[in-house]
View 1 (cartoon, rainbow, N blue to C red):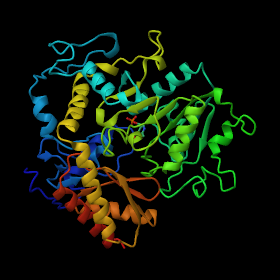
View 2 (view 1 turned 120 degrees about the vertical axis):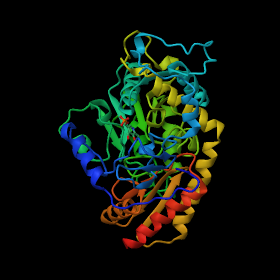
View 3 (view 1 turned 90 degrees about the vertical axis):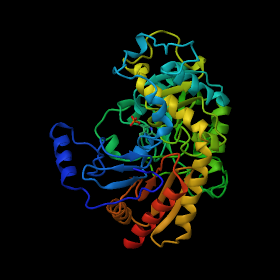
Length: 450
Ligand SMILES: Cc1ncc(COP(=O)(O)O)c(C=O)c1O
């Protein structure tokens, strides 16, 4: 496959072999959340956003596996370096009981494992004074550990603050913070004391013109969070708040970008009351938005960052003083030990710097939003995004679903989120030609469904 000339080519989706593979998979798999009966054939051609499915269809994948494959498929930008290493063994050591060396002097190693990844993570969170990382296996674990260290640091304060539309994972602690869909929480026990507040996602909102509910519509212009924490009027003592957790740009909740007024107020309040601010960057981090972290677009200064997906491991990043000192308070068998995953994460960060991929994300994201906005499609209510974290909001959920299916049939993979939003996540090195292809296929699909 030549990435410079490849185009999506679809005969039928799902084809016969795809159906067989799906059936085989489902024989023993728990019913889960697979979006399409799309089966990537790992033995066939794939590069960047292009891949071949089990029936030989060529697809343009603008999902980047929900930001977990930030460079798409078989990208030479990391694969060439991975191939330099003789990865003959599974190379998975039991993470946090042992250490691994890359053979060279520490810090100079050509094979960056967990230590090399943590060093890189500290480099890119230095502007928030972060110097310490706990590696785990998934985003949910990164969140679990973030709230654990926040409870620990605050001596077990009883409240956590989350926002409407939030999604932070599916383990019991993390799901307690979710406020997107009831399916994530229904019938499951939860961490107590989680307070939720509106997430102000109207880009035009200011404190006195807000229509999102975070700033109530009355003369005081004090936000709901400020009122809750107010010593005279509020019912929550700031000392009892262990953390506020926020996605700088909401993911599952609908690719919602907060207003500056909201983020300014959040920054001011956590500063005033010395509350630990956790930024969940599991979807928005690692260059996806055109900056390394979604938080970098706003006034907030997180005390803890959670990352995962694009890193291939989970990471809870903060300052030494926030982490408990006592051994065994945090640990995970495979946490820091998955050398191949850590290597991939570290090489991804290297590639982002080496190939200026954040600049590319900004330029290509702009190209996408301009192309779709210029098409002036009636069914589209909003086209938004930062970098390559792009959302297209429709007039109805049914239309969004129909457009997603029409895209698939023309060979463009996209994902849904929120109530009626389609999310588009091209790889960070997506080219002008590929954006043109994808945006055109999407615009055609929208017209067909209108
Ligand atoms: C913002 C956010 N937090 C947490 C998670 C949970 O990550 P994981 O699925 O790796 O547990 C996700 C996953 O989509 C996410 O988008």
